[in-house]
Length: 82
Image (cartoon, rainbow, N blue to C red):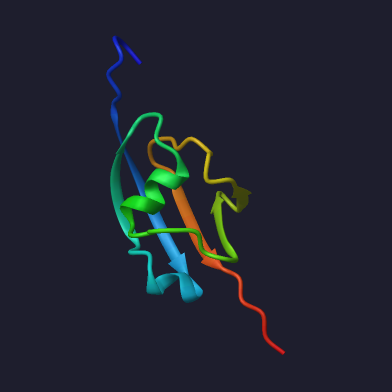
């Protein structure tokens, strides 16, 4: 980052399962240095959700993971049944 300016980045969010009730899938314009949690807030997340997992390139990531331009983030919510 030159002189504190953060470049814009484009990230795609895919949503599967019950998470589709509270997250809006699609393309998002964020800033360099933004994290998965920033993407989730932009997509409509308003608080913690039990069982919500995020993946980048098939690997589970934490909400604190920094995003890079062009990444695809998949959000899914695990459910249990019997």
